[in-house]
Image (tube, rainbow over all chains, first blue to last red; front, side, top):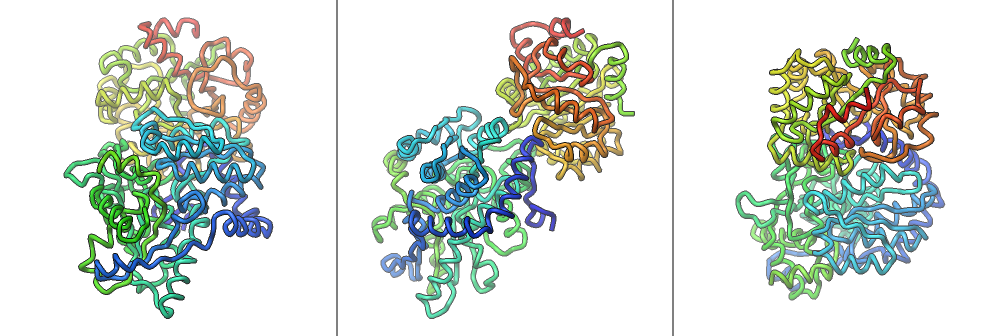
Length: 387
Length: 253
């Protein structure tokens, strides 16, 4: 397989001026990442600062109601409230050991921005966060958290003012400011080596979850593993160690937006086609002429017209089923998990929980393991407007 | 020899730098665009660079991005560009170069794109988001149709990578003057001279300096190190101010 590719997907479709920092990063992955110093410090940070291993939670009331066994991998309990911290601490430490001083990031829901800011603060680095102007309003609590922890927030007014445009602007900043800056890409997407690097830091989710599930279930594996897919980092982390387990059905849930015919959605794997954006060949929401379409989801972290290339590959080879959940279904799951189990999930993760609810008939008697990628405190403002 | 190289060398023989103006297709309006091209051609452009508008132009600064997005809103697409160029084939003295991002070209179909380039008299192509590692399939499609894939290198391109680009390059080499996006700048980095010298040693085709070029005075310090200059944002701003391309070209002659 060609370097940087997952089957037909992946690559390095970026301006030549960004190749030197990407090559530098690739080299650091080969030399610094496997070093004892990196691994020791990273493991220690995951334990002491993130709170790993995150727990596995059984949901007795919802399980009884739905007629299945619902288990949650609790990334929402991580410090800073989501799986994102696994990646930002990893990339932050790597960047620090590469001699960089600034962590640059894009963010949609704000969770990656918060996690990057946490990593920067812990490592004595500066955080510069690009966020679509629409998301700055939608996710005000996270903006306040980032500012409190010392990040410079740049509201992006161009394009659709959401994650896609924040990525464009962050890439431009990196072009201009690459010597001391590491682009701490937030999801398992973008040009090689980011999809590999982010998966490396997120695969701990499935490594832990697989063992924890077997420990609680007499060595059995779950029947179904589910995660929401925006760019796809929590999902690739949740899927990675289950991919070789043929008995496990793996499901990625994309956001269908309002679900009305012709609405903007965030489901490139289900509704998109092959194309090139943000450094990768992948599935995209686009016009026939190759212009990128606006995306929409009630969950800002899923509001992206592309997806990580490994997901496109896993779909192409038929290993993972990708399906959609709409805004209303996700909100229903949000309320149900909050009221039945006392867990307020992120709207992003609510899409994955909603899969179990909406497919309860076919999942009767089965064990369903869902990645609860983040917590929903940040979304209460959105919910206040809707409910 | 690719027509872009021929035209730049013709200018150089007259003791001048080749001039490579850039305009997004359909700017400032669908009709006016072709008139601007005629003016640029008449004013001595060696190569005319036409931007293929894209919704997410990460290598472009605010001036080019805004102009390109307006053109997209006006319905400009690759078909419109090819139709207009085919209609005017043979009417331009300058060589024609298309610049854009991969996705629209990819969706158009590479083989069809390459054939239409030839039919429309296009001599070169710049894909801003395609380093040499990914360029093989595009080169393979366009070169049999006489279309050169113009390499972009810059201040941070190591000499070894320049050599990779130089091995199969034709037309000219586009040297990006800044680490950043397109757009006018008051001054250019001092490191340019050393890197241009390196590029001169590596490429046996003309070197054009682009990004941040605002007026001809900026080029005098690079005498002997560059063969052509590319300017886009300054020209776009000039036209937005209601002035003509012909007027813009005056100081460059």
